[in-house]
Amino acid sequence: MDCPVCHKKNIESYVHNCPECETDLLQFSIFDMAAEDYLAMTKRSSILEGKVVELEQKRKRDRNNYVGKIYRNLFFLSLLGLIYFLFFKKPPQPEIVPDQATIENLKKQHETQTAQLKKDLEDAKNQIEGIKAQTNVKSIQYVIQKDDILWQLGELFYNNRLAAYQIAKDNDIPEEKFRLLPVGDTITLNFRCHE
Image 1 (cartoon, rainbow, N blue to C red):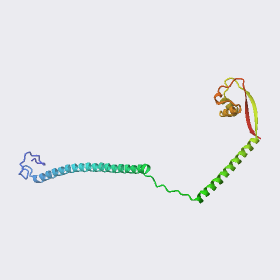
Image 2: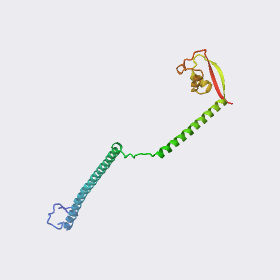
Image 3: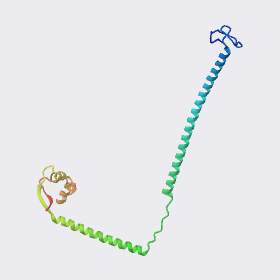
Image 4: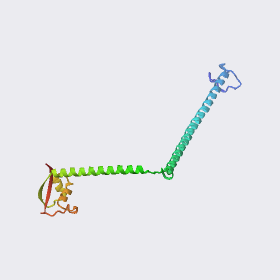
């Protein structure tokens, strides 16, 4: 052992006091042992803390895996139940046995609704006829020029390309000839306006 005060080297271990400075070496040896014990305990403690952290992480992973398995199993069980109820289990069908009074009542309701619908349809037809009677049709004659097509004429005269169908209907032009209008032919353009 070495003296920590005067730094004398190689003092025998059975000597309790330093031969040069009379320092109590026994107390220093106790401090050294306590320091070594403290370092050893700190080392063991850090090793144990590392193992505790490792075990805690493993426990969390195991718990997450277990919870995941439970959720997967619940999902598949509910999916199997849904498939069973959708495809295999037929709900009980109630027997419908209408009595004669119900049948007669339904027939009367049907006849009443049919009569009302016929009346409404007749009223609508009369309204349309009234509007047609009030509509004044003014016509002009147009001579077809080179490169004229019905779509362009509808846009030009009616501000609507779809008016080509009405022009075709008024002049008996089939749809396949919308683009092939003979140059020089005359068509009638009808303008409908209310009086």
